[in-house]
Image (cartoon, rainbow, N blue to C red):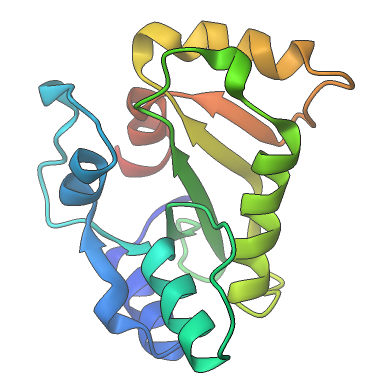
Length: 166
């Protein structure tokens, strides 16, 4: 499965949230990424899920709930299978002991609910840390009691680029 700009734009149009499409470069900078080697070279866009949640909450006249930071659509090589990939950016974390399992679960539940429980959500949820904290974050996920489910993945932007964008 690889990132598809066209499928991501089509999904945004389908849910009537085209205004929430944002350059991934801008979004990761806004979320605190300072690694200049991470800049994406193309015009990749993702759905800013905070934007989507804010607009849905406004329409539904309720307070916004926690959500993942972004979503994009990845598709298989034939383009016949598409999945929505959720990504949360945790670049500003200094102390990983502040990570709370219920907060992470809540972000996934909030995003899934905001999108009306789509059936094609990717099997993994990605939580992105600075590269120097990636291993510590993985260890923290494993040390939580009970451990975070394996499909909650602590990683960094380099891995996300390799998995979905290269």
